[in-house]
Length: 355
Image (cartoon, rainbow, N blue to C red; front, side):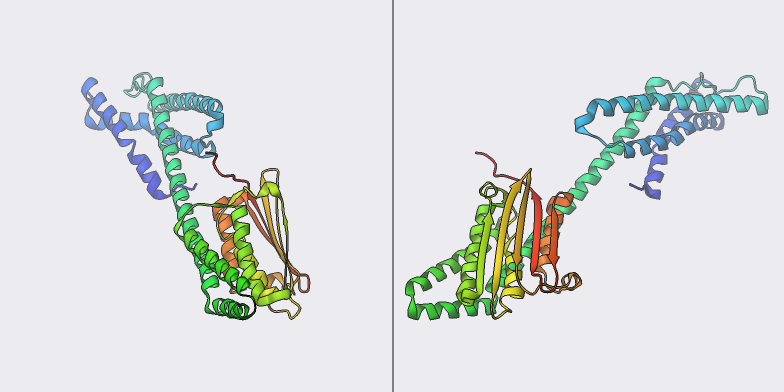
């Protein structure tokens, strides 16, 4: 992480107490004037300040790793010893240069008289490293908080999108119109349809008020209820096939992971064709990865058309995965004109906590 002027200003100011303490020490114990004591302390402390920049860089290149604690501590111990040696060596070089140019035989800030000591320098190194790792931890915490806030925002937006889709007047009108038709011919089917609609809306409202993930089994059941209502409207034009691996059903995932993809296929592929089409849902679990696919045999589209589409469903679905799982999940779209539309998601396997 690149450090700004503010950081380096604070870094330099943090050395003032050490320089002040040595100024007081030389003025009171060696009888030096204030200016002489100040010069002695500044000359003695300056190498530590400059070399401390290297300590900052080392901490950035060597992040804390709980799995390699011994290596981490050993590396820093070696660097601390190098820091001490470099500081003392710098003082001797400065003393030698002073003797060469001034021919002084004795000066107040000889390395041996500048009594900073190995233990003190190691403590200074430890303080610099501790502050750097505290800053890194704070940065990670802030990034995590921002990620959680973004995830919650995206989750809310996705749920609201699903809610609007399910409560959209056009959707409700078509569903209720289909139910009215069923009432005249098949009262039992109409009753079942109304029950599924109630379950669908209740699930949506419940998911909007809770933060918990659900199992793939629950997500599939929700998708089936949604599809059953769409099938009342589309009839034989909507053909659904499933290929769900049994071992995948207990995997946990965020709510509304499949529904936006299913809705997209029905809206843009199946409902627009007089002959309808086939919607396929696949789920497989392999080697710690849950793979979900939603495919249709509709007209397809060009990739640039999908990227520039005004629809929010696919975009929010992609953002949710990226925010929730970061680089551990993938979201891929495969489509070409006349070749249908396919979405594939690979996410890490997560199972319900055992009770």
